[in-house]
Length: 310
Image (cartoon, rainbow, N blue to C red; front, side, top):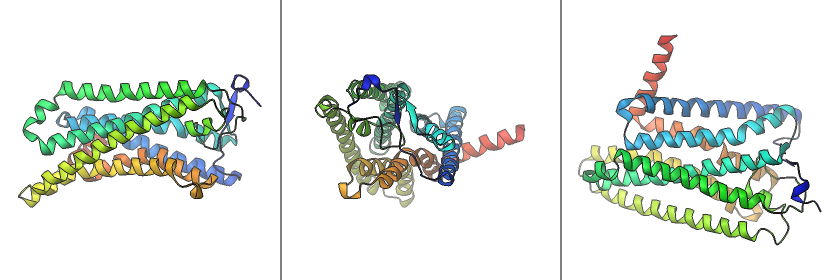
């Protein structure tokens, strides 16, 4: 039995067994991460520089792009390093930092998606009160609350997880540090506090999910009452990107953590973890850009302006 006080590093799950596949995974992760950095960076720059985009919807989208950038920069660089140099180690402190930042950005993303749902609800169901309910100060407070709650959630879970004594080695069955894999290494009766924290987090997530479902029921009812087809199309076009991003985030996360045991295997778990931790940050900007003409125009102006300067 080994105690956590003697563990200086963890062993992460290798993305592949052969050198050729490791280099292929490195190239794939490099391409995905560069695409995510470029796309989210363009959205952040376009919203920050375009004064006509200084509205609540684009303000929250800017924050969502920041969380996407943070989440992909937390997990992918270490996985690329391990694939390139054929290693699987991560320092104990590095694992704790990776877990904290991953929880921080993932929690912030879900909180921001919930706030963005409220923005769409007010915009469509209470348009006359939009300026009052979602003024600049209210938006700043909601964004700050989303980031602060994510920070607190990440801090509590990271502290609780790494305060557990570890009795079952240091090999993690995942390509990055996450709570379920660390709990498997803990002593049998020592992880009750973290399990209760996870239950509390699940209840909070479920509460946000119920709020989102209720909001979209009201939104769809309001949209269907719009007399003109053009008005209905415009209202739906502002909701569909958010709904698509939310569905991608929730479906991949829920299936990764709540899949039946019969579906569990190292290769399946690895594929699902890549699906919910790497793919959404790269796809989210594309989903929003395809459906939003204002954003596409702002990104195009930003890109053409940069090319003309050079």
